[in-house]
Image (tube, rainbow, N blue to C red; front, side):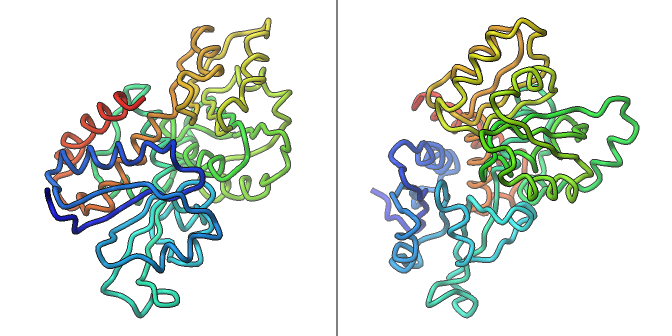
Length: 326
């Protein structure tokens, strides 16, 4: 049995359902990293400080899920473009050689966000669009220039985001890059539509001149059916009433692509309704896969080797392991 010299894990509460260990450990096997391991730990907001102070230099990095994507912020420095823009991180990397800049006896911690590009790559894959093969560009991608690229388009694309929590903010950011950056307007549909509307509108304006408005979720079925892209960031089953509203509509069928970030159950009611009415629906396992691929590249330093080699080496084994787990 190999000695473990490099440790990573996903933290959150609850966490027993997480498939991140399946994905990351499959990547380690594919890369021949026999002394790496990836686990899960149930850690809530009040537990994070104690957990971090219990780590040793064998720890390389962490994946962070609810409710820790903002809780981690005081412990580290946002380092990638999206982590800086959103103030939300799903990835933390330890620099044990730099104790000077760490907090309260901890090493320096650098924070990253791979959720945004996970959404973009999931959409690209579903539409069979070529994605950048430059790992560094994918890890630190920004939306520079989307407004100018949209300028010559006769009809800017429209997106609808269901929900307005942390993942919805990542979805707003992703919309500034998705569909060849043609999206010019985003509608956020939520039970409390005004919550986080200001930050979302500011984000859209800063990242590409995208306008953002909001409406009640219960009234958004027709708007969603007319959109070019719909991203549901709602928890499992929370979108079921919305799905039933779409199914009961007598008007035009959905015209755009749906990405539902939920992967359990699979398919969701919303995905099933979308597909039954002839439109393309993508499950959350695709976002989960691509954000994890970028995390592996970040944590293992694989961005420094041939980019196509990274993708060719880890994407298929990770996808196969995910499908088997689901």
